[in-house]
Image (cartoon, rainbow, N blue to C red; front, side):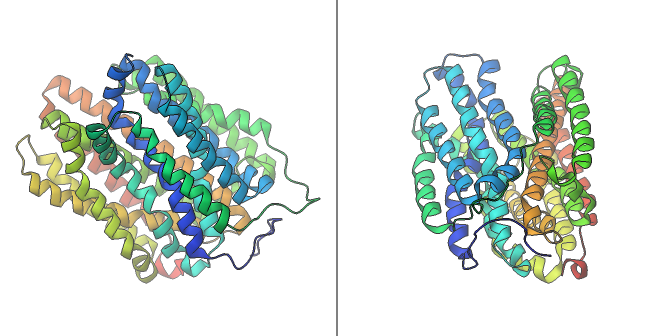
Length: 467
C-alpha cells in the first residue's frame, strides 16, 4: 500500500527529533485534561461561584476537545500536519494564558473552551504524525514513546494539580503549560518537516453535513454523561435526552459517512478493517477503565481516608512511576509476544491490582496500597501500546488521520461512560450503606470493566498476524 497524500514530506524526517517535538508540545494538553479536576473545589472559593458553574471548567474543556477531533483529518490534508500542529499548540498556549487571566467563572469557562479546541486537534494529530513517519516494524516502539504522555496524563495530572494548589495559587494550574508549550512551538517549527499540500492540488471539501451530525452527537453524549453524577443518575432528563439524541445523530452520521465513501468527515469504513475495529472496541473499554480509576482513586484518599489535596497527590505517585517504567519495555514486549497477549495480560494485571482497593477500609496500609498502585500503573503502561498500535498496522498512511480520530473518539466516549457509571454506583451505595461500602462496591465495578476490557482485547491480532 502506498501513501496517497499530496504532500511534500521529506523522507529524511528524523523520528527521534519528531517525537521529542511532539511530546514536549503535546504533554501540556494531555496533562491539562485532568490537572484542573482536582482544583474545582479551590476554584469555587477563589472565583466565588457554585460548583454547578465551576463544573463547566472541566465539562466545557472536554466538550471542546471532543468536537474538535472530527475535523483533524480534513484540516491535516488541507493545511499540512506541521502547520496544523503549530496552530493547535499555539491556540492551546494562548488559551492557557487567557485562563490564568480569567476574572470570573464565566470567563474561565470560555477560555477553557479555547484550550480544549487546541487540545482536541493535538491529540489525534500527535499519533498520526508519529505513525506516518515510522516503518511498520517500529510502530510499537514508537507508540511506546509518543503514548507516554497519553498514559501518564490521567494518572499524574491530579498529582501535579495537587502539588500546584498546595504551593501556588490556582492561576498556576494553567501557567505551568506556557513554558513547555512555547518550547514545543520552537521545537516543532525547527524539527517537523513541512508537509503542506502541493500548489494547485485540489483539497477535499469539508463535509458540512457530516459535521452537523457528528459534532452535536459527541457533544450530546459527553454532556449527558457528565450530568450522571448528580442525583437521579441516568434517569435525569439532562442525561437521558442528550444521550438519546447523541446516539441517534451518531447512527445517522455513520449512515451518511458510508454513503459519502472517502469524502466523509471521518471515514468510518475503516472499521471494516479488523485491526481498526478491534483497536476501537478495546480502546473504549480502556478509556472506561482509565478514567473510572482517575475519578475514584483521588476521591478514595480524600473522602474515605481524610487526606488533603497534596497528600492524595503524593499517594498516587507510585501509579505514575509504574506506568513510566512499563513504557520502557512495552514496545519490545509487543514485538516479541504480539498485541493480543500483551494486552490481555496487562488488563488482568490492572484488575488484580485493583482488588486490594475493593477490600480496603479506611485504615488499610498505605504501603500496601502504594505497592498495589505501582503494579496497577505498570499494567496501564503496558496495555495502551498494543491497543493503540494495532489500529495502524493494516492501513495506508493517508488513512491514518481517520484512524486516529476514530480511536480518540471512542476512547473519550468510553472514558465518559466509565466515569459516569462509577459515579452513579458510588453515590447509590453510599446513600444506602456508608462511604466505605460505596468505595468497595465501586472498585469491584471498576474491576468488572477491566475484565471486560481484557475480553475485548482478545479481538486484537495475534503475534503471527501482527507481524
